[in-house]
Length: 287
Image (cartoon, rainbow, N blue to C red; front, side):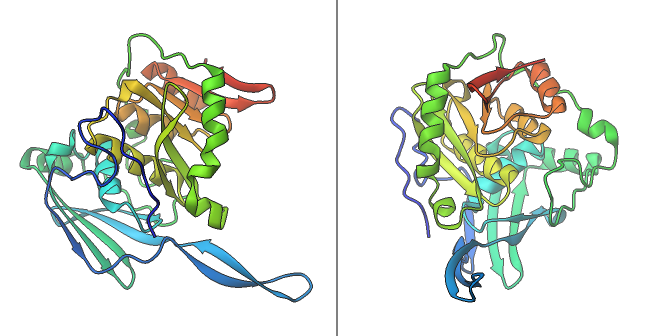
């Protein structure tokens, strides 16, 4: 099942069915992102329920195992690009030379071919992450604590300022743009929003980090100017969301609930604007 997405006017490439910059081979078929199950009510009656699917997704770079994530089985091309960028395996989508999306009985293998230069850096770093069942702490699997204090790039000289009414408009339309969540009520959404408050495109996943990686991959493939809008998340704002967004040049990140103190400090380092819904409405948060 795939949600309908509208192309974006003025982009070099529309997000809808954006052609990747590299050859892609699809092997096997992906399961549906959600399925109907039967649950028992308190009175013993059987009730039809929809649950999201969650499958292991292995990231393999030039036959080197890197990480295993649990994710909703869709948007794998976007996911491969976004994850590779935010993990700093590649510096640009053009560093990806090919992708095989291989479905099997146990999950999905994303076999990604990267440039020799990126592969050399990959081998030198020896940063192995094996994250089955990641609960979202953002640091599982790092070999050195210094890795997660790595400085973030400055996303803009002047911090982006958002109109709270524009942010509220986006919040109000978020639920209606999440078809999987409408059916299951249990997945996150990451949306790209223009400065008029219109949701331009959105990705969903059981993991908020996965949803953001998928969105960032889609934006990169469509060659979107990251300074022309902001990211809206249906989750709290963690350190890793700030890190991923900063790595791709996002200047403003909005979450449905507040960030951690560490996320605030990292956003300040990147000069990224953070917004959230507070008791009195949309607020900007900073340290």
